[in-house]
Image 1 (cartoon, helix red, strand yellow):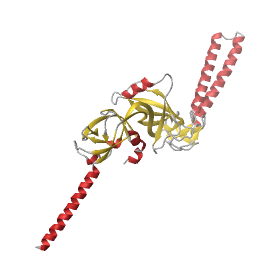
Image 2 (spheres, helix red, strand yellow; image 1 turned 180 degrees about the vertical axis):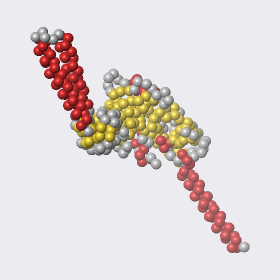
Image 3 (spheres, helix red, strand yellow; image 1 turned 90 degrees about the horizontal axis):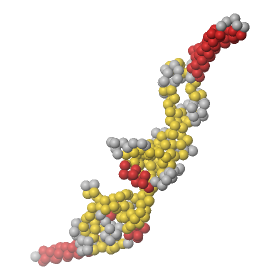
Image 4 (cartoon, helix red, strand yellow; image 1 turned 30 degrees about the vertical axis):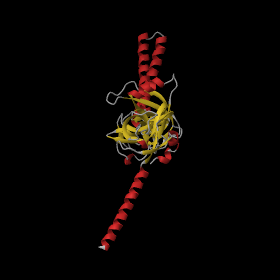
Length: 360
């Protein structure tokens, strides 16, 4: 019996100690950090998925039929305007040109003889006119043969970079067959789609002829070192998406950007009197954003908010809060709806200064 009493005493002591620790722990947990929203001018960054294209990107196609006799360049090579790239076997066209040259020479001799006779009134003026017409026709056929011969040489129409080959040496190519592509990457056109509402804001804020600048975030998550200029907007909206395409032009002196790359256009815009709150003060339920507001009785009440934009570690709130509201900053998972808490109010300026330290 004595042992039983001792055992019960020990259990009671342990139970009291445990309860005391839980009460102390609960008391410690009731001191939550609270802050207010703050209004201030800031900058927001709009992010748009983009496609990067060369300012000039063309297909080089065969203009005559024949066997590919020579390839003077390699894939990925930089070429200069006028440089010969491909040679299609020219023997047939050389023969046609020689034939046309001979016929032109014959027509010229015939014309000169007829002219001497016409000057001596031996032949009628009509015969001289016929001889002149034959000469003109022969010269035209010679010029056409020369053009066909020139078409057997494919030259670069501008400075650029050669793409992969679609034919190989010795291939029989038909007129119009694709040989390769040529890209002028000295400047790049970057296309991105803008929703209708943002397009209207853009036009409202545009000042005269001043062209806005944008930045390009590349696929390696680094910014392209040169800013771009928004130069043009397409004429029509896409009825399916409600977007319209913008085009920004970027200089590319180091040829870092290539045709077909992707990236993100970042547009920095001023935002006046933005109501800022830390992102960590929010939680989400069914795709809606909420915060916990502390009421006059120090009770926690959830409130839905509307967001205007997102910044690093911050949200800009468009609806649902005022500067006088007190919002729960930490311990959102430790409280319940309408639960009364004790808290410490931190100035929003201090919260913003140390936001990086608070970020989880």
